[in-house]
Image (cartoon, rainbow, N blue to C red; front, top):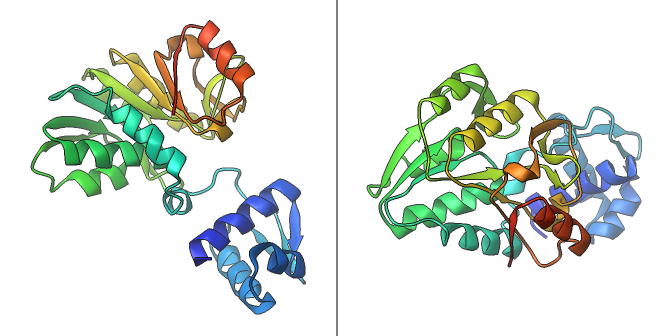
Length: 252
């Protein structure tokens, strides 16, 4: 197992259970206790968990997994969702992209395909596309969030208000019929909302783990989402409720 995979499993386990000891993690990961201790020390130094004698606790662990870890997990589901998303984009379209691991996959596919204009607030997406000759790149300014690599806040919202996209892809931390599209940060939610307000078509790209989930800050109700693209493990009841609110559902 790669170190990035171990770190993700450890973070998810501690987040779910509140704590974990070295011996349990050693069995879970199939590695030595010495390896687990090194992993815990590195994660503690990144302030992703709090070390204890014999293990770790959630402590000040953010519920938002930093993008650098999510990008290491290029799951087949994310790639399938991204392919379905890219298929919605006509040649020469103006495309909005918020930050996130799945939207980053969409950006890669669009850049490989041909002429496209990308409007994004994600600095990792901008860095990946800036030298692509087929991409016209517009980067939305703002205050940088290290967790998501996004530029957010009033500057970003004003820039988006002065532009219009043909289609905008939103990465979310939760989506449900009851609570709508949500994310962890208020400023990020407001910037994502600006993407949705200034586009002809709002498309949410979300793995099944995001469905039926609500996080801190609301982006928009599902009635303002034109299309949700998710994977086949998405709960059918939640999909039906979201569809009843008016969103088109694509399951890959």
